[in-house]
Length: 118
Image (cartoon, rainbow, N blue to C red; front, side, top):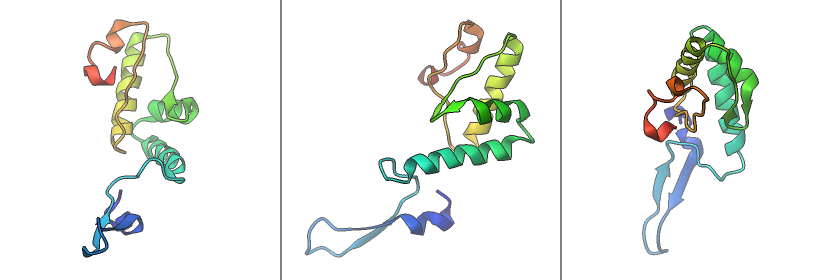
Protein backbone atom coordinates (compact mmCIF):
# COMPACT_ATOMS: atom_id res chain seq x y z
CA UNK A 1 0.00 0.00 0.00
CA UNK A 2 1.45 3.36 -1.01
CA UNK A 3 2.04 5.55 2.10
CA UNK A 4 -0.21 8.29 0.66
CA UNK A 5 -3.11 5.83 0.50
CA UNK A 6 -2.76 4.20 3.92
CA UNK A 7 -5.11 6.76 5.47
CA UNK A 8 -7.85 5.21 3.33
CA UNK A 9 -7.44 1.97 5.26
CA UNK A 10 -7.53 3.38 8.76
CA UNK A 11 -8.82 1.24 11.60
CA UNK A 12 -9.87 2.50 15.02
CA UNK A 13 -9.54 -0.18 17.66
CA UNK A 14 -9.82 -0.87 21.35
CA UNK A 15 -10.35 -4.11 23.21
CA UNK A 16 -12.75 -2.71 25.77
CA UNK A 17 -14.82 0.43 26.11
CA UNK A 18 -12.56 1.58 28.96
CA UNK A 19 -9.42 1.70 26.81
CA UNK A 20 -8.47 4.65 24.64
CA UNK A 21 -8.96 4.22 20.91
CA UNK A 22 -5.82 3.26 18.99
CA UNK A 23 -5.48 4.21 15.32
CA UNK A 24 -3.91 1.81 12.81
CA UNK A 25 -3.22 2.28 9.10
CA UNK A 26 -2.91 -0.87 7.04
CA UNK A 27 0.20 -1.36 4.92
CA UNK A 28 -1.30 -4.05 2.69
CA UNK A 29 -4.60 -4.77 0.98
CA UNK A 30 -6.82 -6.79 3.28
CA UNK A 31 -8.21 -9.83 1.52
CA UNK A 32 -11.77 -10.64 2.31
CA UNK A 33 -12.98 -7.10 1.73
CA UNK A 34 -15.35 -6.46 -1.17
CA UNK A 35 -12.73 -4.45 -3.08
CA UNK A 36 -9.83 -6.93 -2.73
CA UNK A 37 -10.39 -8.89 -5.99
CA UNK A 38 -10.65 -5.66 -7.97
CA UNK A 39 -7.53 -4.22 -6.34
CA UNK A 40 -5.49 -7.36 -7.00
CA UNK A 41 -6.61 -7.48 -10.64
CA UNK A 42 -6.00 -3.76 -11.12
CA UNK A 43 -2.51 -4.08 -9.63
CA UNK A 44 -1.73 -6.84 -12.11
CA UNK A 45 -3.03 -4.71 -14.98
CA UNK A 46 -0.84 -1.78 -13.90
CA UNK A 47 2.24 -3.99 -13.58
CA UNK A 48 1.61 -5.25 -17.10
CA UNK A 49 1.21 -1.69 -18.42
CA UNK A 50 4.42 -0.60 -16.69
CA UNK A 51 6.27 -3.77 -17.71
CA UNK A 52 5.79 -3.39 -21.47
CA UNK A 53 9.07 -1.49 -21.85
CA UNK A 54 11.37 -3.68 -19.74
CA UNK A 55 9.53 -7.01 -20.08
CA UNK A 56 7.68 -6.92 -23.41
CA UNK A 57 7.20 -10.69 -23.79
CA UNK A 58 6.26 -11.20 -20.16
CA UNK A 59 3.80 -8.29 -20.31
CA UNK A 60 2.16 -9.72 -23.44
CA UNK A 61 1.82 -13.18 -21.89
CA UNK A 62 0.53 -11.75 -18.59
CA UNK A 63 -2.00 -9.53 -20.37
CA UNK A 64 -3.54 -12.49 -22.21
CA UNK A 65 -2.75 -15.45 -19.93
CA UNK A 66 -4.10 -14.62 -16.48
CA UNK A 67 -7.33 -16.15 -15.25
CA UNK A 68 -8.04 -14.50 -11.88
CA UNK A 69 -4.62 -15.04 -10.26
CA UNK A 70 -3.37 -18.02 -12.29
CA UNK A 71 -1.21 -17.66 -15.38
CA UNK A 72 -1.22 -20.39 -17.99
CA UNK A 73 1.17 -20.23 -20.91
CA UNK A 74 3.80 -22.20 -22.78
CA UNK A 75 6.44 -22.09 -25.46
CA UNK A 76 8.18 -24.53 -27.78
CA UNK A 77 11.72 -23.65 -26.68
CA UNK A 78 13.25 -24.17 -23.23
CA UNK A 79 15.54 -21.13 -23.51
CA UNK A 80 12.58 -18.91 -24.41
CA UNK A 81 10.57 -20.42 -21.57
CA UNK A 82 13.37 -19.69 -19.07
CA UNK A 83 13.66 -16.11 -20.32
CA UNK A 84 9.89 -15.64 -20.18
CA UNK A 85 9.74 -17.18 -16.71
CA UNK A 86 12.42 -14.82 -15.38
CA UNK A 87 10.72 -11.83 -17.00
CA UNK A 88 7.40 -12.75 -15.38
CA UNK A 89 9.03 -13.28 -11.99
CA UNK A 90 10.87 -9.94 -12.17
CA UNK A 91 7.90 -7.98 -13.49
CA UNK A 92 5.48 -9.35 -10.87
CA UNK A 93 8.02 -8.92 -8.07
CA UNK A 94 8.05 -5.16 -8.76
CA UNK A 95 4.45 -5.12 -7.53
CA UNK A 96 5.12 -7.30 -4.50
CA UNK A 97 3.74 -10.46 -6.10
CA UNK A 98 5.62 -13.73 -5.59
CA UNK A 99 5.03 -16.29 -8.32
CA UNK A 100 4.09 -19.69 -6.93
CA UNK A 101 2.75 -23.07 -8.09
CA UNK A 102 5.08 -23.35 -11.08
CA UNK A 103 4.53 -26.43 -13.18
CA UNK A 104 6.36 -27.65 -16.28
CA UNK A 105 7.05 -30.75 -18.29
CA UNK A 106 10.74 -29.75 -18.46
CA UNK A 107 12.83 -29.90 -15.25
CA UNK A 108 15.01 -26.92 -16.25
CA UNK A 109 12.07 -24.62 -15.56
CA UNK A 110 11.66 -25.84 -12.00
CA UNK A 111 15.09 -26.84 -10.71
CA UNK A 112 16.37 -23.29 -10.12
CA UNK A 113 13.25 -22.11 -8.26
CA UNK A 114 13.08 -21.99 -4.46
CA UNK A 115 11.00 -24.91 -3.10
CA UNK A 116 8.29 -22.58 -1.75
CA UNK A 117 7.59 -21.33 -5.29
CA UNK A 118 7.08 -24.75 -6.87
